Image (cartoon, one colour):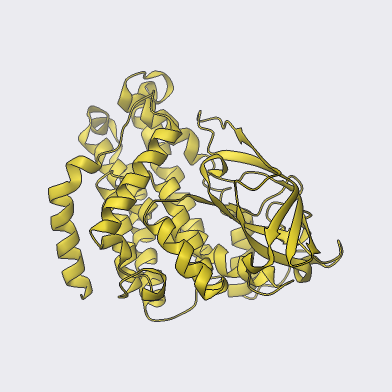
Length: 376
């Protein structure tokens, strides 16, 4: 199946099945309900074949261009059938498993994620380690054929729902920095794991603290090489800063169209609207370029920091426009539409933080793309 056939077939399928994929909305809708809905969407699209296109056959996929994956996420988001934040973990974690896990482990596990049978999380950040991953302290020590993990992670998205975790651990000395990190694939129901959700200012508890107390992990769950976890992280982060954001861009354009069609849209300043629309389509164009590079076999790298900065700028600009045009709804509205705008506006404040702060992304652009050297 080529891309044109895929798009036409998917659009027709969504026209027919879209009504049964509409998610719950409203002030009383919990994150758990959204997770259940996402599992349903993934299961139905997997069973129909759409979720399998763009992934290698060796992990349950049907082959084809990665552009198919991009179009699926954008189609679901543009029809408001998924919450883009929780959908993104598939595009972040599945490629890393395919690249670094034992082939048999990837073949066993990746279909579970694609099909919606499981949720995975990403254990990178720690209380004293955010953007500087080289200083992480969560330790894994060898014990026979296994690893024994002790330490803490924080800001781990969806950990309370997760069945597995891609976990970065310290296996070298505290001074070993990037060279002493090993990535593990951990079962979240292992004895010794405690998860504590953190409620953020937008009222959702999608972030968590995760504590590891002598947690035993089989040695064959090592991803990549021992002490080679930095390579795993550097492979994963470009996906977090590009492929996982494509459907979010489609979601933002859909929400902007919703604003324009609402009574509040009449109050929009045309100049302000033009600036935001320009940002939204600049990110869309950048995403398309990244998609085609990836489909052409290029490996993603530091250039995805440009994608991340554009997305963060666009997201905050969209919701700043919403706050200006529908201030009363955002601040006080208790109807489903107002409550949703308020939740999304508050979440957008973190756009320049999650996935690597805007400052870090600009430093990467300056040093690694523009060769401007190191800050003094």
